[in-house]
Length: 176
Image (cartoon, rainbow, N blue to C red; front, side, top):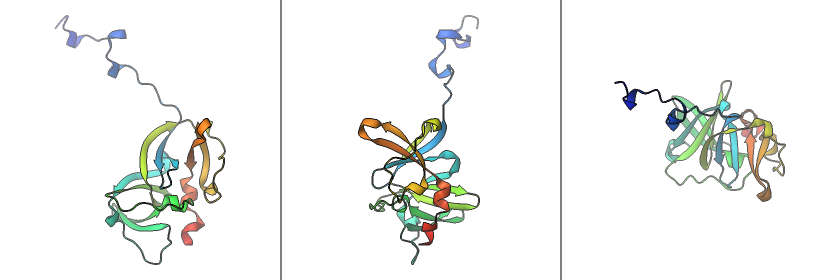
């Protein structure tokens, strides 16, 4: 065993890359996603209960409900409302429900849960909350639900807007 490379400690430069110290992420974890209009948004991971993909036929339409609501969904024995997030924020484009699965972000505050249907999930990313700016050129219908934005590419006016899930959950728009 002495001299066998399998049993050497491998300290220093000889150490394999997968065993080297990982860099600690900076900022807070956020979920990035797109709504139907192509706008990229983010939600803080702390307010997200789960991200699920459901076939459209698993979302049961409810007659005489708000047009913002796609219907209800059975989430682990609990019935939750599912809304088209893009339309809720004022987008004219409706969510395409003619596809195999619809990404739904289940957000929760206290005992209230709501499913936010989006067009596409980008993924989780660590974002620096200290570099959030006040939203620029945000539509009036979206402004009450924004915490701020990150400017990704200033020359193209590309930004990533951070939503406030508690403001969305408690909005009076659901009663309309």
